Length: 522
Image (cartoon, helix red, strand yellow):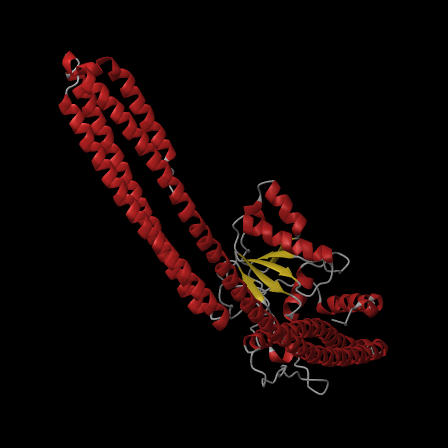
């Protein structure tokens, strides 16, 4: 509630200053001024009486509100309904606000009266200044001054009394109302907090039950997936063992037939050695391709199973609120140990690569896709990188998938002792040009164009044998010319001598091969 003490002190200081400034001319004021001050005092008394009566009315309103609050508190103890308590509390707050607004309005009216009184005092001071020259009215002015002082003292006493009554009557009521409102708020907050705690406890219990069911379902799903993985791995291992055993049997048969071929007459040696070499190389290449296919198939099956498990887990997570769902692990069926292995040599029917292309300037890089030699792999990658960086279009010929290309490469690049040079090798128009070292030297010396010069046309031609049936894997960074209808090669050695050298080389490689180093457990 606003404090009136500061305004009263200010008014007193103003009145005292006006008294000090106007006492020197009090003897000059007239009787008319005395009658005007009397009317002002009477008006102030009337206004004070009105304010006091209105204050009494407000105190009565506060007492009625206190009684209503007590009645509502009794109802709260009986009913314990939070909604009615909230409405009652809102009604009490609204009435309290109305009471405070009325008190503020009264304070405003009192300020206005004080302002009017200050204006009257100012006018009185002006009248005193005008009547300073009237010496005949000094006694009347003194009487009026004395009367004014008495009235001011009376007014101060009335104001002090009104302030004391106001403080004594209004403050306890307001304190009581505020205290009751705080108690009601605490009771409502306590009820709401208890309800929230109860709801939270029920929700936590429900979530715990759902979590237990979720963990159980995940455990079942994981166990089923582990069993399926073990079954698939066992089947894959069995299949690989069968393939390895079949390969070993084939190799043993080839060794036996090779030993028999060594004992035969020289007249039959050429045809038999050619056939044995072809079967031996085809079996070795087929085994490498087959093992690569089995590895790829195994990785694909494992990937599909992992994706299937993740999809099933996501699907189960989306339907975890349903208690009757049944989880099923669906695995992709494999061929199993009884299934037949598809041999890539019989299945692949690509065209035989051109060993002597029609385009005499076509650059061909002979390499092997199944080589396990790290040096050869590194050289193959290096030679392709060098040709690509030099903007040279070339064609890749995979000797691991083409028997014709393998035999042609060995005949063209054979050394003086009859041994073939290691991969990779560069051919231009079917003519051997060199290896990685030769290409690197040509690039360093700026003789790349001379190194990759087109093939020279010769009059002596020889048709390339086409009785071998094998697969090829060709890739080119540039356009590939269509196969020539009548490819030609230049004869270099007698076929019988070359076959004997190849036979000796294959026998040496077979004797030096260590099949125990191959890892068949994928």
